[in-house]
Length: 474
Image 1 (cartoon, helix red, strand yellow):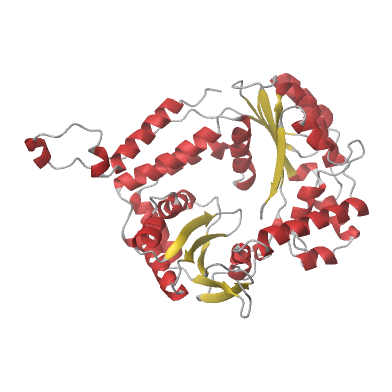
Image 2 (image 1 turned 30 degrees about the vertical axis):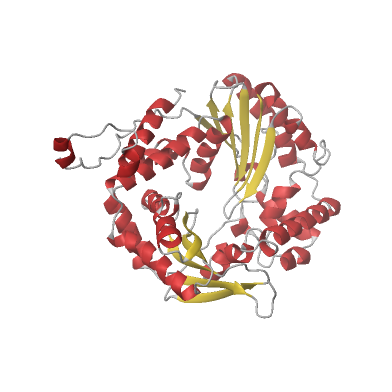
């Protein structure tokens, strides 16, 4: 695989930085212009040159048991990343059992037939590597990085916990307690945890995305071991998973190891559960109120329905979100925090998913400012992007930042494997890893305006107020 030329990326970033540098900042490093030069009109900002990116060369195959396998050889370092993405997330949680997918993110680190509890950590961390996992609405993913001479052991361990996980009462109760404590820390103890946890539940009308992926304590407490065993049986199987290996390996040797360890995992006779869900168009604007016992300053959030991540509008929405909220120079930060001083922080996120996603704008009020005042300023700045497009310099800066961030991440086995897994699992096609950055670079100012008009200005919204509970002491 040809490595990305970061010097070209850095050069494009430098050009974008010069394009947006304030005049007073540029004057500190530039020679004093002549009188005639001072009268000359400033040159128009131009878009950065389109970066022609070398494609990532990968191999894709499917085992007899249905496991999708994608491998990418890179000798940039003597390390390798192994990632196993199961096609199950919070959306598949059974009714009244929110948090099941999240529970299994933790359960997979417990004991198997041939591994003691937490021994997976020893196989990675004790040899200088790392491991972690995450659960989203659409997937549960496990990812590791180890020195390449430990690759075979790690493949065996991943296949072992796919095939022989102990889903018993002791492991279930232990990890249920861990998930419940995580909920207490991230949602209940965090000053704004309840607000961020309410984005989906307050917004979706029917889609299972409405259930919080982190789970609810009452749902977890109501679960039984038989519920957990059934969930594991239905979803943790080779034909519902994608294995990605990226880094330093011998391709023929790797294929042999994968066939040896993962090929031995039997495909269940029962068909995969079919997931079928939709979200109706929102018929009107709605409001919701969320309260907490310790809210330092009130906050407001506004959500709109967004298209799936596979939509042709996805790149323009990503760029729009970055124009509004990426960094100190973003529109929301400059307008609400610095100029108007109505908020202590403000943000905007294009939360794109396999199914219908959300566009989320939020702001935390500055002292003495009402939520009405903050909400009006937030909406005005977000909708302004539909009428006042990003300038050439603004657009160049944002696109260069997004592309650079992606390319820098892909220089590591972990980032490279993650990029391919996201394309294969969330977008349904590994080849998207070689086109998505080109699509970002092609986004125009008119594209940004168009998607903001379509999904924000013409769409219905949900407004969520977040305040201190009545009678609660700060």
